[in-house]
Length: 252
Length: 246
Ligand SMILES: Nc1ncnc2c1ncn2[C@@H]1O[C@H](COP(=O)(O)OP(=O)(O)OP(=O)(O)O)[C@@H](O)[C@H]1O
Ligand SMILES: [Mg+2]
Image (cartoon, rainbow over all chains, first blue to last red; front, top):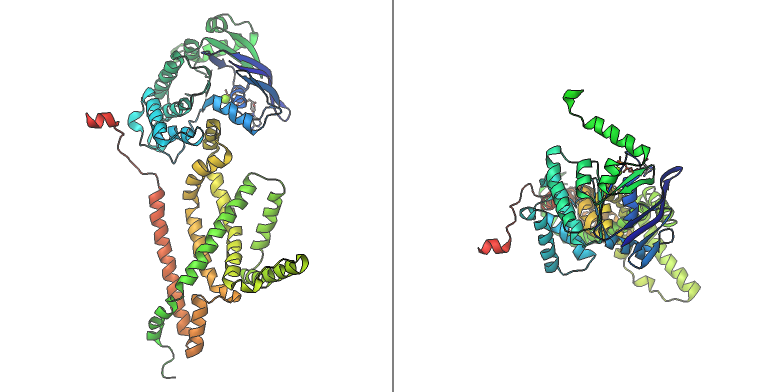
């Protein structure tokens, strides 16, 4: 459905992504894991055009966009088809929860206010935030803000939802409520790319897992394949380190 | 002279001066609108680093800030008509330079002067809005100008408000120089009144009181606006309409 080909991104001499290709099928929930600094965020940001890749192609259905020659229209087309959920929520501070979710519908989709309001309330209901519709971001906990941010992205009906560590800025006790929401939308067949350090959650919610290492996809398979039988040495080392860190304190 | 200082006159002539308050305010408000609009444009050009325009903006700001407003007013008053006369002469155009009132020159000079100062704090206010929100707007599919209008400006305005207030106060005081363009506003009228009675000192005291009161009023209005724009500390939960009816 959405196809990424030969995506490359560098910061000066630092090559962050090198010829990354990824075929995303409808309904795929792809977990992206990997060590810190390997380009997971950069990959999502390059797909959403928040970062400018040097080269690569993105195909939306039949249309193939050359990222090295794209124009403004291409960018808006890609962004209309993708939604982004950020680590730090990035809600609009001066707008209420309801206005946050309505914003894209009104400004980008040009929907009449009443219709936008209806859709926004539906989306807020899905993430259990209806009662908070009149509140402002500063009134809410991180978990609540993130649920609103998910509703805001979903309201635009993107073909692909990009989630960049949606729970890593949250206090531990708030992680669960956000993961529950993500799990629910994954169950509804939304296509998404999920970058997360919550390994058991990734394993649980994804139908496909990608291991990114130094700007390359070194592992791509079902959760069982990647987690239980990693082919690459880097992946094995990564899991070994993870396990070590996750051991209960009293053993140490 | 019976008394050196006519205390009563200070207050009794205030109504005479206030007759010219509308002109002072008109000058100030129109200059302010021009100053904010142009200042916003300059700020955007600098933030977006528009090639060529950015250099022009930097040069323009430096020039305006580096020259006295009195000189700028004189240049506007004498220079603009000269420029149009030259245009008429060179290109056979027919600008009616003589019909243009001094008011226009004063507003142009005051507005341009203000814009150079406004550009800096408007830029700082725009930059104070976190990139996160701007990225969120972009990822929804908004253009920069949509994000500017809907997301950046509403937040930046609260940051800029105190500086905007200072700017308005300074432009009101700046209008007292509009006599250079042959505009009779409050201060010029004061000079005329003073010239009649030779009670210059009293008239300047009266003017000082008026300007001071105006400034205090503006400060109070700003405080009110600031309160209105602030995010409320608490709001009631939302209750869906169908539940209200039930
Ligand atoms: N604006 C930038 N300028 C220079 N280098 C950058 C910039 N942004 C990211 N990088 C570099 O790109 C690399 C990949 O960063 P990225 O944020 O994509 O990693 P990540 O996999 O998301 O890591 P994490 O798990 O810590 O979030 C890092 O080495 C980082 O230092
Ligand atoms: Mg990251």
